[in-house]
Image (cartoon, rainbow, N blue to C red; front, side):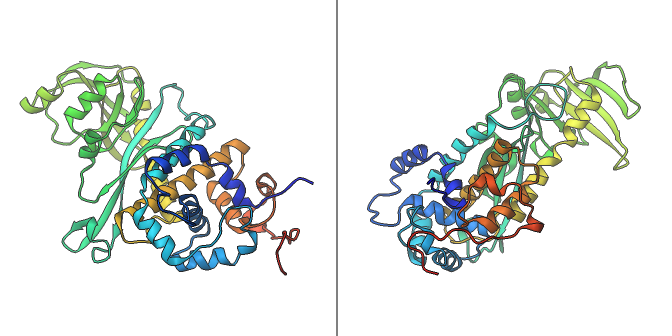
Length: 386
């Protein structure tokens, strides 16, 4: 008879355990550990993400209620103090490494973006997560406010967070893109808002063969050196320009393209700045408009993952929770594309949450709709008392 494990155990099987164990060894996550291993810590935090638990006590109580189904997970016991110590002391980079291994798997499955061009399309942006300064003193943002920033390179092919980094709330977006190497290949297109306009950084993108699309600042000093044919009534002008300010010209001396575009939805004239002279002006405008998909991504993870209220107050505990949350997002994405799941990630997460400890195959629950979900009693487990 074939064994059927719980939905939770099938989720865990999707995680690259070999790479996780290598990271644990690298960062000595299980050094001096006798019972509660790093893998068990990951299971506990992943459980809190799936079931939306708000505290360590909730996690312990919830898992203890399913203790009869632990035999296949490898959990031997869980305590509030042990989990708290693990979150505070075990290096969060182990879960960061797991995130990037899961990302590699997802990239092989995701569909392409909806534009006609074949260039990889990305957006870079950041989102602030507010924290209580008295509880998180290491995250000082303003005099009486704490915050951290989640910086993301968003891949429009599959809605994937291709690169993530977390900083304090005071760190400006331009400093982050200068201090970190974002994985942008030549011939990629990246859209950013005006907060990222730094001509030294834009010049470095151009030298890498990366196309950028952004909004021009109102005080831009330039001279028109050429005109492009107007292909749409929405395009008011399409010009080749050179920067004229002594400082800005020294930072970016090559030609740029300036497009004035009328946005009918907002009834507003928008001015775009790019180093791409090949694509139509309307396509450049649509690329920038698609940048708002990253805002939807930030909104989704804040509403559906536990990254606004935290299980611990130390910086390591906060980052551990964020990276495990993002691992869960990739697990959901992997399941959706691997199985060609027809509903949204939100619906998928709700189904998994309701069926987490059911003794069924994951593929069998993917046809269930959350609004008509019926939990059916499954076969008794070995050693379970009813």
